[in-house]
Length: 536
Image 1 (cartoon, rainbow, N blue to C red):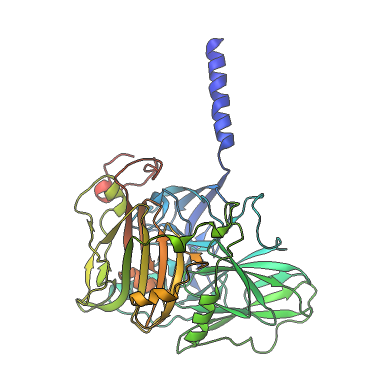
Image 2: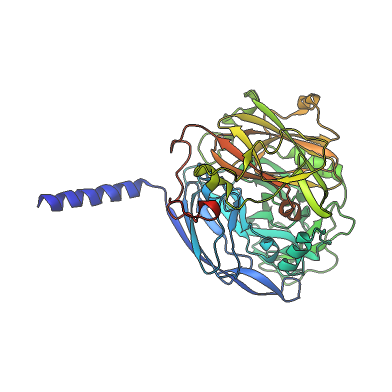
C-alpha cells in the first residue's frame, strides 16, 4: 500500500511539474523533392509535407516547439530558424556550425523554446544551395493573452513570403558557385511561391488585416506596396514599432515586417506589387488584394515603386523606431532597457569584400573567407576537440591584405555590451544577420565610419532586430548585449556570398559551465566528424 501511495505521489508530482511548464506544440515534417511551377516552368522544388512554401508555424511567447524533420532527400539537410533566438541553446540553430546534417532517410527532432519572443520570422534550409529550391515558411509568435498589444486584433493575419527566384535547378546554381563563378541575375520574384497574380488575399470592406512580410529570397532588396492602400508599420522582427503610415516599404533580403492594411477603398481587386531595388534590371511581380464583394478584377498597370533611390530608402530605414511605451513579450514597456546608457566594452568593425582565391570567386569578412570544418564548431567546442577551429581566426577590424580562407571564429565574452560597425565599401546593398540575438540599429549613413559618427547615433528608440542592411559605400552600426551563450552564425543574407565565405561564428563564451547560462547538449543530438563516437 505504501509503494502504491509513493507511486501515486510521484505521478502527481510529475503531472504538477508538467502542468507548470509552458505549452508544447508538435510538428512532423516530411522533406521531399517534388515538381513545382512557380514561374510557369517545371522545377524540382523542396516540399514540406507536400507544400511549397512550407507550412506556417504558429506559436505564442514561451511555447516549446517540437519539430520532427524526416529527410527524404537523397542528400543531407538542415533547417534553420531566422530570428528565433534559441536562448541558451545554439545546439538547435540548424546551421552547419552548430548541427550535424540530417542524413538521407533519417530524422532529427528540433526541440526549441521561443523564450521571451514575439513577432514575425521565417525558417529556411541552410545547407548547400537548398534555399534556391524552397523549403522555407513563415513563423509567427503571438503575445500571451494578458500582454497588451499596441493595436486592435486584426480580422485576419496573413503570411507573405517574397523573394527573388531562379528557374535554374538549385544543384546547377551550387555547381556554378563551386566552380568559382558568379550567378546571373535572378529570373523573377515569387509571392508565396507563385508568380504574377498567382497569390490572392481576401479582405472584407471596413476591416483591418495584418500582413507579415518576409524577404526569403537569395540576394535582392524588394519594395512592397498595395495599390490604393496605405500600410501602417507595427512590428519589425519582434519589436513593436512607432506606427508609421507608408505607401511602400523596402524589405531587404532576410528581413521581416508586419503592417496593418484597412480595406477602406471601393469594392474591387487591387494589385499587391513587389519589385527589385537598386538593380539596373528591374524585376516585378504581383499578387491580388481581393475584396470579398468585388466584381472587378485587377486591370491596368500595377503601381510603380522606387527603383535605385538610396536616399529614399535610407530615410525610411532611419524612421523605423521602437515604440518605447508598448509591451514586448513581457508586460514591461520595450523602453525599459536603456541601451543608450550602457558603456560599450568592445568595438568590432566588419567589412565585406570580394576577391579571387586560386582563380575562384570568394567573399570575405575582414579578409577571411569562411570554410566549414569537418565537425560542427559547437560540438567541437562542447567536447573540447582540438584542431577544428582557432579562436581569433578573424580580426576585430578590417585588414588591407588579400583575402584568405579559414574556419573563422571570433570569441566574445558573455554579458559584454558590444558595438558592431558593418562597413560596406562595395557597390551592392549588403544584409547582415546575427543568430541568437536582436541588436539595436543605432546608426547608418554613407561614407566611412569614424568615431565621430557616434554623434549621430540614436541612443533612445533605435529599432531592435536581427537583420540589418548596409547601403553601398556606407556603414551601419549596432549595439548588442551578449547575454546568450553559444556559437552563433553572423552571415551575409546575400546567399551566394554566404555560401562562398561571407560569414563567421561568434563564440559567446563563459568559463563557468552552468545550466543557468547554457543548456547541455540535447540527448538526441546528431554526432558526426570528430565528434562521431562521443556521447550525449
